[in-house]
Every structure is written in structure tokens, then in C-alpha cells.
Amino acid sequence: MSYKILFIIPEQYRPSSRIRVYNLLDGLKKHGVESEVVKFPSGLANKLPLFWRCKDFDAVYLQKRLLKPRDVFLLRRSAAYLIFDFDDAIYCDHTSTKIDKTSNLYNKFKSIVSKADLIVAGNNILKKAASEFNDNIEIVPSAVSAQDAPQKNYSIQNRKTIIGWVGSSFNLQYLDLLSPVLKKLSEKHHIQLRIICDKGLEMDGVDVKFVPWSVETQEREIAKFDIGVMPLDDSLHTSGKCGYKALQYMAAAVPAVVSDVGINSDIVQHGKLGCAAKNVGDFYAALEQLIASPEERRRRGKASRLAVSERYSVEAVSRILASILRKNIA
Image (cartoon, rainbow, N blue to C red; front, side):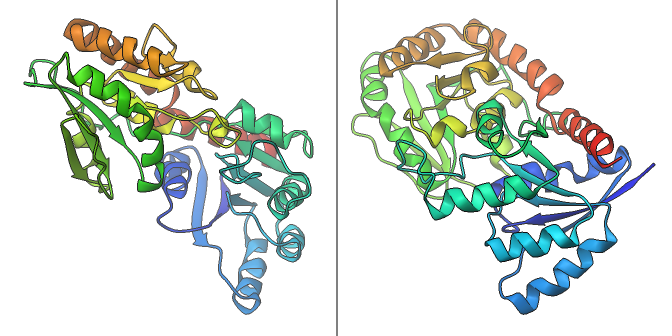
């Protein structure tokens, strides 16, 4: 039996919409889920036709968009089955040290989570936040393209060990946390920090190369890294992240060194596939170990690629999500 799902996304080019919706559509279709994707419009005159169209689908899948109470009410009345998906701590702002249950943000989160038939959360931490208002919650990790993604060519040795980072300019603040570590490593080893982003970042005493980000080239550029890094501060907001950077590195067979925040240590399986650093000292030790041992980088990189293919690939996650949709909608 096939199902028709209307995916409603916040923005067409938002990374989470690409990762958790667009990248999964072909896989879902193979498993009997027909999909249509629309952007949530502004203005009641534009919203009403969308709400009316919801009646033509077996389920409506709202992805990471917090709505006004009026819109939640209308969407709930229009959808035969309502699903809400989120992959970030969207119930608090980036600077929150604790959840403010009186905030407009939190009340919007409560409104949609309590009204949905099914919640799809990116990890256990997000599931816990939603469980206060809904008992029907499934965990679906963010997926990376693994089957056709370029892999690190370990027969080629770079003149300098390339420590790489990929992300948006907003998150460069986290990369800057590694400035003292990378400066100290640069004094002992031939390294280069390679940044794939919409803008660059300078670090005193560190050889930095900026590579402009594009969806067409990012996978190929990541495969040129020797080591991938994902530093974060330990906050309420960052603890909800789904480790997508680490998964990108691992899909390219590049070992990852990440901050031990949220689910990161589960993804990299600390000590087996990559390293989860509790502080800058741990980052230094982990990076120095991998810089000194190309063979260890190769071993962990290859094992990382296999783990991602089995658990976090587009193919694997599409299969998981299709199974969840069939079970719940039926």
C-alpha cells in the first residue's frame, strides 16, 4: 500500500530541509511513500489554500517550522494525520542556559508538539524535550549521502596534514574555540586548517585555506581532509544538535574529532571511529595522535564510512522513516 505525504518546509534552501526532506524523497518513493513538498507561506490568504490542500493527503509532515497558535489550529483541522519533525533545540534560543517555559518560542513548540499525531525527533535529547507533550515519538537521525559520496584517497599523502571544517558562517564561532589548539599544533607539525564555508576565518599562527561552500562541491572537498573537526560549546542549544558535520566527515572516510556534546560521542563511537573531546586539551591530544599516524587515520576513516553506510546513509534513513510512516498512518 502506498501513502501520499505533504511535506511542509520552512525554507526551500534551509540545510535541515535538504537533509531531512529533499534527500529522502527518492528513497521514500522506493518504499511506497509518494511525496510533495511545499514551503509554508506567509499571509493568511496564502495559507488557507494550503490548509485546504492538506485534505488530499494521507498525512501532513511539518518540518521544523514553529507556527502561530491560529495556524496550528487550522493545520490540525485540515490534516488527516499530522507529523512534526525537528532536528534542533528549537524550543530555546542560542544563548539560553535553561528552558524558559514562559517564552513565545517554547509555547509555539508546545502548541505543535501537543497537537501532532506523531513526532519525529533527530535524537534522544530532542525526544525527551517533546515527551512532555506527546507520547508518540520516533527517533530518525539526520542522513548523509554515502553510497555515491567521494571517499578519502589514502594512497595520496598531503604535504601538510589537512584538518578540515565545514559549516555556515554563523557556526565559525565554534571553530574559533580551537584557535589555541591549532596554533600550538602548528608549532610542532605541518598542518593546514581548511574551512568550507560561505566566508573564511583567520587564526594567528595557523595556515588557513578558505574553500567557498556549494552543495555541488562540498562532498568532494571534504574527501580531501585528513581529519574533520566539530568543536562546540556545551550549551542547551548545542546539546540538541544531530552531529551532521561528523557524519559528513565519516561518509567521506575521514576520521572525526568532535566535542563531547549531545549525541556526538555516540556517533563517532569514541576511541573506535573517532574521538569525542571533553575540552581543548582532549582536542589537542586527539589531533596530535591522528597527525602522527596516517595508518590510524586510514583505519578509523574506513571504519567510519562503513558505520555511516549502515546507520546514517540516505538509503538506511529513508527505509527507517518509511517504516515509521507506514506503521503510524495505518
